[in-house]
Image (cartoon, rainbow, N blue to C red):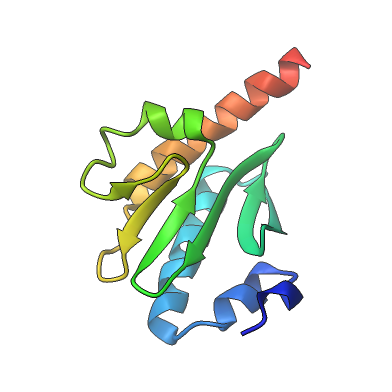
Length: 122
């Protein structure tokens, strides 16, 4: 599948099987609900959201799905996500696990506040 041609989130989600589409759509809706003003974009060939700067990215892989955040934001919540594999900028969740909606909502709202603070400083 050629990811370079993906120019919107709907097209990205449709590249995957129905099971994975449901997961990706759940992440998308969770972010939209947490920060309704956020703008949907494609960044680094992945679905992403902008709100006074980049807010989050998400993607599906062979055995997991990931939600990518700024490393500083992820650091604040590393204890909340300790049951998942964490990298410097991503939460890796096995495809067999449901989307942790409450945690994702919490981290997205925090990231939005941080972006807003930075925007006001500039």
